[in-house]
Length: 179
Image (cartoon, rainbow, N blue to C red; front, side, top):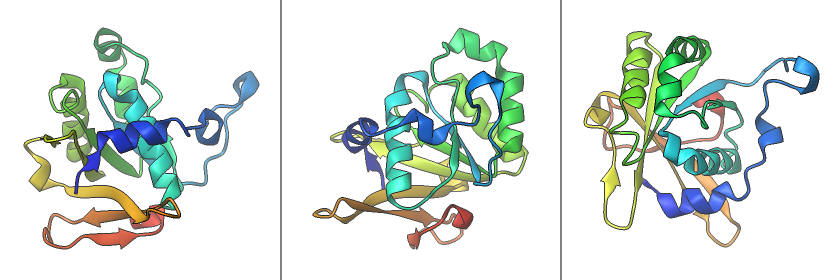
């Protein structure tokens, strides 16, 4: 189930940076007790990443979402690839936010390949525009993650995963530990 990009952009307006900080003022580091989820995305999709985080938290999937190089250009990113590898190494889960740009971006596909090589728990998050479904061509090799309305009137969401071994079954999850 692909997440509508309009929903991601709508949810982005509710994103609060201070709820997802690893570094505190004056260079202090927050001890993270939450699972660390690395979100791979195209630079242009940073608002959709914010929306994704809001929706995941609305579905009670509370984690630290590592995506801090959102503002770098592709040229600057290439210089930071070693650091990104270290961040992927530290992550418990790797999430690939599939958009038109990310499935074509060399750095995103390299991150996916690296996470696979390091045997990370990988989830593809397909997205859609009005009539186009976005997912990398290799998506069948990985688990999928989606978020949908549980109750439109209450504004509640539910996260679901589809494991590659059981492609016809979407399993609701209620905790980051289930990723």
